[in-house]
Image (cartoon, rainbow, N blue to C red; front, side):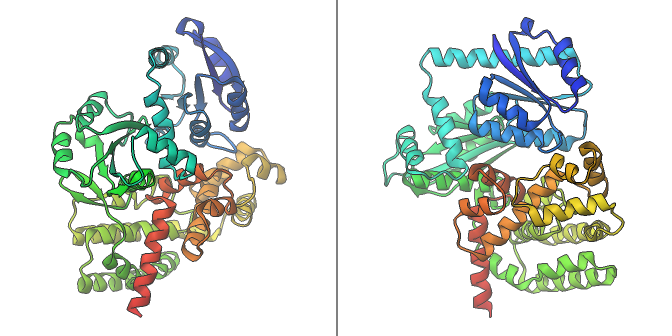
Length: 499
């Protein structure tokens, strides 16, 4: 029997799952139940389950963040999400958190048992692979996931060199195949494996390829890409060529950054592109801080004046689409956190846009800014209940502490669920999402203004795990902390030259 743990802050849901689902008939033992993410972590550490089923939204910590931590420390645990929210954003967030499946409340026992059958088949297949000695791919996946998150420790680099058969000066580069929703299809993996690269799985929706070559063979990747089915839901990104295990990690992270904001389109591929001199010069020329202030100005003419200035600068400079996309990512980083739920950023689509003409892109950008004026005013807090204002103030001033909705609610003598509803209704985002975004906002400031190590900055802004920090940073900003710092350095250099 495989072991399962379920998590939901509603006791009646736990009871329903326990009674309505034929666990033993499906090959599982329900060995633990939890009503909070913190309690679930203790159960996972203690019971070592094969399967974790968790609600997406819970007070104190989102189920998706619980999944990220479990994936980090217990990568073999299969995770299922269920939620009463049919909104696509929750399903998308669950998929990004390496979920095996997503179930919608009210729970349908037949649907649950059908999903459990798929989970059992996957666990049976893993067991067979282990018994037949196929442990190297599993170990390689685990090691390279850590490398992807920024772990360049001597131990990880040594293991990467052995597993990828890389010497200190051997040239290499990486490609990443990603599916926006769901797992990468098996047929796509087989097609890309024909490239002669060493394959590895970063998550169900991300599949990596490691090449030991002096030059990137983009025509080959283009040819393989053309052989894939359903390419509309897939992206293939490529990092640069570097040397040795450390260079492998760099190329892998570049390929992942190319899944976000740092890429230029080459045929059907996304090829990693760092912030170049023209982009840095453009960011030094445009006044993004003034745009941010104009968005909050009650007078609509303030924003219009900034947009006119932006268009005039664009007419003179003729920025590339990459430069404009990176501008959107940079503005997104400095917007008030109550305005934009970064997981569903208003500008995220513009980061990813790869086919529009620059002028059409600029039109869409200006249109979105005009539509955001009323939302930005919410950041002032006018009209918010006192409890919401106090909660926002606590996040703003105590973001580096261990904060939870339960703790803040207890300080205010309120019900956590009710306070959470007030936060979402008046600020537009959940308590946890605002806390996370505030921490990332301050991390961006430290990355721009200091040379402190990334791990130290992670601790400074309230993260206790640098890998988890790197994962969340890339998810919200479209690039890794190292890439963000490098881009900001290039911008400052260009500004100094311009002066």
